[in-house]
Each structure stands twice: as structure tokens, then as C-alpha cells.
Image 1 (cartoon, helix red, strand yellow):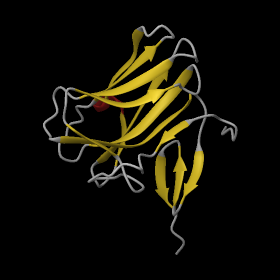
Image 2 (cartoon, one colour):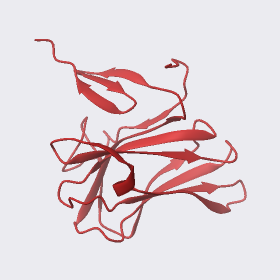
Image 3 (cartoon, one colour):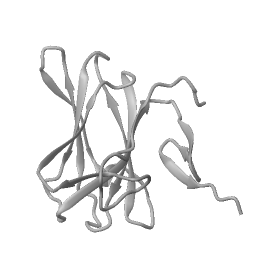
Image 4 (spheres, helix red, strand yellow):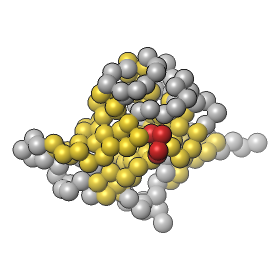
Amino acid sequence: MPDSATTLIWERFDDKSSEKTYQGKGAFEAPLEKVIPIWEGRLPSVSNTLSVWVYMGEDQHPRINFKGWEIDTEGNEKLIAHNGSRFDVKALDRKGWGYVEFPISVSNLEHRVRLELECKQMLVDKVWIDELLIRPQGKSVFSQQGEWLVYDNYWFENKKD
């Protein structure tokens, strides 16, 4: 059941200039490196679901891994998520984007989390991700974005014919 009071993190990346976008005006674009930091902050809940759209069109085999590090108040880091896109792809669209979803949990809500892309085996020059959503596990998110209906980061065109 959706909860209108649910705290969530939705990084749309519309403020970033990008050659490719899944939705909106921008996406996170980075030249290929072994490790690419993408976000840092506090999670909305102890147990969460992270979903994101990853451009897979040129690689054709999702080789991006997501890593999450919990950083305690003294700066100590602990690996809390290490997920491979190839295992966590839930959907593909016709434009080469894949929907990736996996759980991410912290031991303490006061701890910060750093998300990174691990790209050791990529066969492309750049990587793109868009529409990063982190929501409490078990909570659903509904939204209308222009002509689109969004349900848990799945986008459905809402054309009125």
C-alpha cells in the first residue's frame, strides 16, 4: 500500500548535461573509470530499495556494479551493497535502458552512505544512469511527471488520445 508520507530520495539528474537521458532533461554521465562515485547522503530508512535506470545499449551486457558504503560518525567505512546490474535487471526498454533494483540497508540512520559504480569490465567509453530512487523497503511510490505515470520508478506513458 502506498504511503504519502514516505520519505524517499529521488535523484533525477536533470541539472546535469548528458548526451543520453532516460527521462527528464539530464542524466548522470561519466567517462569510464574503474570506480565512479555517484551519490552520498543518508538513507530514508534502515532497510531500503534502490532502483535506477542504466544505459546498456552499447555494451549489450550489463557490466556495471553498484557498491554502497556505510560511513559511520568516525569515518569508518563498511561495504553494505555490491550488486551486479546483470543480476538485478528487472526490465529493459527499446532505447537501451535497463531498470536495476536491489536492497540496501544501514545499521544506523545517522550514518552516511556513498554509492559508487564499479566498471572494471565495461567495453564502452562512458556510462549513464538516470532516475535514482531510494525508498523504504516495502513502500511504493506513485507520481505523475508530465505525460508519465511513475510507479516505483517504472515509467508509463499517459497519453490522452
